[in-house]
Image (tube, rainbow, N blue to C red):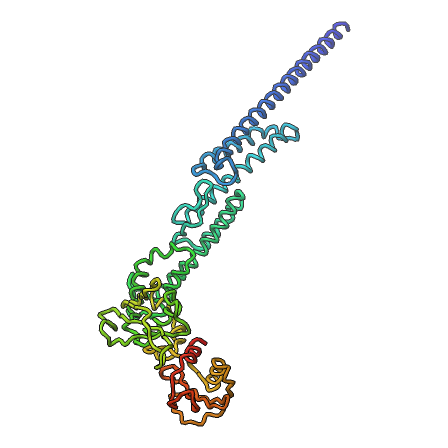
Length: 446
């Protein structure tokens, strides 16, 4: 019996020894695992910080706006490191303060990586759509031209990529998309206008003047002037063709003089001209008229003194070249110059009345106008309008007035644009018509 109890005690002792050993082993293992876990999180945290530092360096100027060119390898390596961090801490993925700190840092790192990669991808994509880079460093150049093969769809395809990037790249892509789309529309409009007039770089035979002008109008109205560069030769040919359609020899002398009148009436070279008091010397005089491809003449203003009506006085020397380039000069003021076809519209030409080969006179003078002008010019006579009772040809407009017992007849010479007066009771002793400079000046200057 004693022997049996000995065996039992020995067995119990053995069990206790084994259990104790297991306990000590498990405790040792737990300590080892805790140390390994702590070491892993510490190592990963250090590497996370290093990866974060590398990612921060890819941003231009340290600001999270644009990513430096050539940063793809750095970002790919950081992304691979981030995956490796996840793998290393996976055995310890449980709700602990240590893991929660790792997860927060990991989220920040992956977000930075993803934002930087999207920013770089959008930058690369949009740069490929333009002839030259539009984003260099942190500079956005909206003046560059889109490639001819770039479509609106390709431009819009960059937007989703940019949406995952920085706020700066989103704004830049939006601006560049608007610019690119506008350029594509302008390029299409310009191409269509060119197609209507072009035969290569030359003007096609039979091209209409309206289409030639429309092409030039499109070119002049371009928001992006660089689009016209490829049409430089055509534009030169169009201008040459238009110039050949309008020369001073393809219009009448009447229209040529009317155009000269328009610029003269509005120019600084006419300090004394007023109300259209302008005319031309006879081109048959030596040195005037056409000489080869040049037209020369002299313009005149009027003086109203004397006894024989308005008299011409030289005012301007005029020279016009075949293409319409003009120069108006006088001895009393600075010369004015320009082009009669560019500076004068058809509507302005139509406004010039009378025969431009002569002095441009007043128009639409009525008997009532004459009576009123006489009353205003000579209020002391207290004249009242009466019926005109003398013979009057179609060359004249006449009025009759009675004042202070005297009959006054007034007539306007429509051909030569002056006024004559007849006083039947002593004002004109010879009883005939006399030129009246006072009334004529008043008529011209009204």
